[in-house]
Length: 118
Image 1: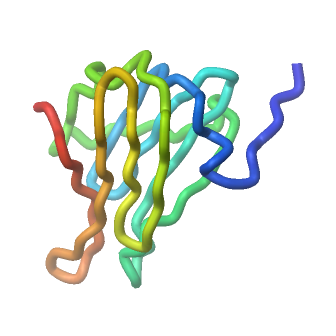
Image 2: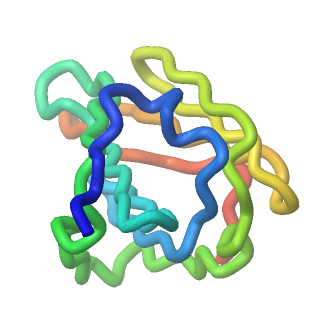
């Protein structure tokens, strides 16, 4: 089966989250339909850049310093998705809102989340 890669994040509305992983400089969602969404802060501007890929192209993250149990968003449907330079805001059903933000510390961009569950 050939997977159609959406052209923009708005085309991800309606998809369900199968899994998620994060590190200080990457957040990804594995979605139903064989899709994946990768969010990373630009190394010089900290603007959040996104990539929509096939699920089997998602990176392997092994950074343990900020390990988060994302299972609380699994099986949630993306009802809305808004992007701005330093924030991506998801409206998830039933999990609720999730904001992915970027910041800079010691001249290094990083991602942080609101809300988060340790």
